Length: 553
Image (cartoon, rainbow, N blue to C red; front, side, top):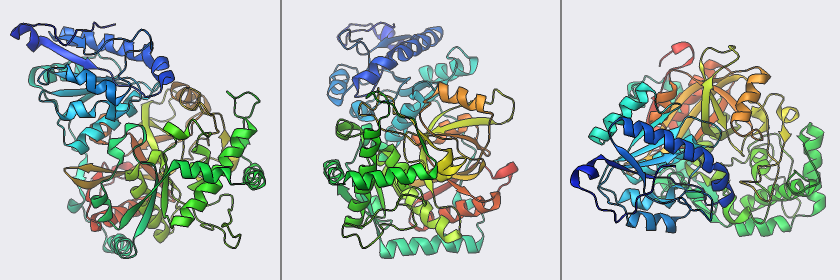
């Protein structure tokens, strides 16, 4: 473990220049921090050796907590105490091998004068890469300058060279030549008109985004300021998870069992047990009640898209919302009647749901739904974590293959076999103490559009690109599942014209939005139509990479 140095330690001016502070931000959940500490500790030791090789000393700015059995900052309160004792001008590294709550330390980073470097280890075991991308997106939104690095081996020559440059200059910039402004592309007139027409309709008729408690897990980057969102024609309906819990308790067992029976008939396999740490039928029944409740509340308020925070608060009352979220995002789903029994709610259509109340994903998902519907393409879409990636160890695919993975919101329509290809496993107890089933499966091969809305320079921006979902041998899929979270759905994605490091350098979020199209040409058109819609709504739009086989627009 690298040493902790008290903030009042006296240093000569020369020693101060050679010292670099490290902070390790973590989860709010004690179980997660304890389970993930070993990976963080190893990462810090590897990073310290690389810093030392460059002629600097890396020291912790906060101690290991023996009673709690980890060395993470685990609350905003604790973060403020730590940063109050840190020299604001010293070099600072935020090292992340785990998921972290950005608001625990955003306050300290906003007020810093010295250079900031965010670093993550290239590992899928714990979502450190995901945590770092969330922090990067949050810093971007806050207008805080920072540099960022990642790597499988901190002793690698390329990593050490980049680290040394940051240590010497306080800055390191990655190449992002794969990014082009939409204005530089020639979009077919008919495609552009589709997007512009949809933008006019949204701004004229307007839409309601139902937000079940804002600000999930410290994701500052996932909150769109109202004045920016409202300019697109979308307005928030701020809803409470306590209302969702209450409404769920009002749904009868009979109605909930009807939802479960519908899924059983469709061929979904629930891997159930009898102990609480297994997936139980009682947990599934509660999830089915939440599904009915979410649709009824959305109908009450006229919502066009909704996002459930789950996590803090609701996680102590009900099983996970993931089964609910993915089902809502699917066009083929259990029918739910209105309170008076006269109407089927959102009949024959999905109710776009954005996981973890990521409002950027919510706006993106609503736009994607409308664009794909107008073009006659599959309307189901979801966000994923940009979790990890690796070369295909089976040799089946030559390209670099990303692991896109998320605990919830994935529609069965995205999976091989649809509902029949979906299984439901209990959520990991470390993150989900009340249990609940996932929608697990392997995403089907095909052409997709990926995108991300983010906030930078006080305005909304959007990146879009093209990718292909590839089929890997089951043994390789299992290797990737075991290297990440095996209970979650997985997408094997190859991003066209965007390398691993280009994606990491540019992407301003832990999340990435994806939607299928029926062919490569259809996906190109859907991407450009959505880009045109975004531009007409006032977003600054960029296209990343190329089309299939290196095709450019």
